[in-house]
Amino acid sequence: MSILFKGRSQGAHSSKIGMFQRINMFFVSHVRQALGSLGELWRAPLASMMTIGVLGLSITLPSTFYILVKNAESIAENWQQASEITLFLRKDTQSKDASQLVTRLGLWSEIDSVTYIPAAEGLIEFQQQSGLGEALSYLDENPLPDVILVRPTSQNTAPTAAKLLLDKLNRERHVEVGKLDIKWLERLHGFLSIAKELIYAVALLLFLAVVLIIGNTIRLNILSRRDEILVMKLVGATDAFIHRPFMYTGMWYGLLGGLMAWFAVLLLLWWMGGSIDALTAQYAKNFDLTGLDVTSLIVMLGLSIFLGLAGSMISVHKHVRSIEPK
Amino acid sequence: MIKFEQVSKTYPGGQQALRKVSFHIEPGEMAFLTGHSGAGKSTLLKLISIMERPTVGQVFINGHNLNKIHRRQIAFIRRDIGMIFQSHQLLMEKTVFDNVALPLVIEGYSRKETTKRVHAALEMVGLRDKIRSLPIMLSGGEAQRVGIARAVVNKPPLLLADEPTGNLDPKLSMEIIRLFEDFNQAGVSVFIATHDLGLIARMKYRSLTLKQGQMITDGLSEDWDSSESKAYDF
Image (cartoon, rainbow over all chains, first blue to last red; front, side, top):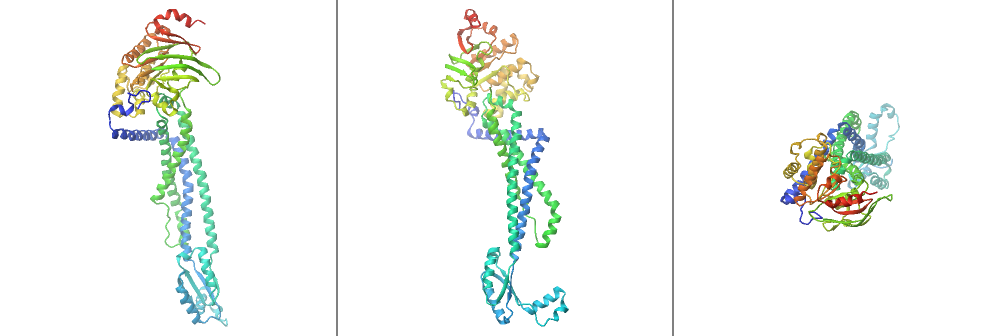
């Protein structure tokens, strides 16, 4: 309604049309402005492509690293589940005591399964694998102790839990020493968490750069359409109405940049695919590179649209306001 | 319709554009604002369309004090005022239709209603055949009339014109003034700033004269012969 003239109706009110039509017109006007902004990008393809390229590549880099680290983590999880504790029994342990120990350990709630390798079996295996076959037969007695392989349940495979279990096992009377090779696991976890934090930091910086680049692009856009904004303000356009095309431009930059990043990540991973397969085949039997599903596509697009909108919003609020008819 | 009460305007830097200006233009009235360049005509119009705010004093439109209008409401105030400029302020890369339709698009009219009103407005200014042209293809007089069509397309109760005949020859100027008379007869209040004294002298309209920011005459242009010499006596 008009502020100055009570009787005078404004806009869609005056055409005697209903609520539905008015809401409809709101969306029609949005769609019109959104398509208009897309058209603007299309009319200056080179400049648009460059901005989209910057946005796309800035998102590609952290995304690729993120996917690689996420996959490394999932491999590491597989390793953890395979972690075993090796118990070397005292030399004087009778085989009766050993088998009792095996039965007892099998009942522990922390333990998934127990494998008993008597000293004699161990020696045969060692003979076969080491290639020292003949030399070993000259020994007076079997130098190997009885060995029990303990596989913890999945809840007890994490480094700290496994260590607690190891301490508990070490207190068993017949156990000479227990070995759990978790040092390297701890190192791997440490490395992965540093890599992750580094990626977050790099991503944050790159995203900030994207917001600034979009903001600056929109600023130039606004300045080049200064006259048009002046005229629109003169004939009664609200700030929101003037903002909208620029916000849509930012949104399009975000959407297209996100799509580009998605394809770039696909391409990179495909390119690296051969060497990744060769590496992972050594550690995990059936390993598939994850992270290229629909969810991550939506996350990437959502993120880049958000960055585009953020950049244009900052620019629009700062610069459209400063253009006032004089 | 428009009422000024002891309005003064000093620009940053100390230039005093208006000094204690008071007048009242009735609803449905057509009036001229005259004076030399730099006398404060443009400033006075800018105070009405809230492009500037008065330093001292109050401006009323239809009884509403413009000092109480918030920045966010200015856009809605401007929708009630049809504004016409000497430099016509058309969008050069848009067609005549798009230019005239702009106020309607901003207010959210439907496509059908917009087309209808734009056609009617261009009909009134006699440019129906130029609807698909770009402003660059138009003559000065035609561009000015497109500007007028845009100003009246949403039927505002008040028309403001700042030197609307500034670049036109006397014959075209007269045609433009006749257009304003038509709108005035339809009930629109019209307020025109011009330094074209010859144009006003032939008509019997109220005219307000500014000199160095002060209102020095306010009366019918008939009585001008006596006051004109005073007004432009330096």
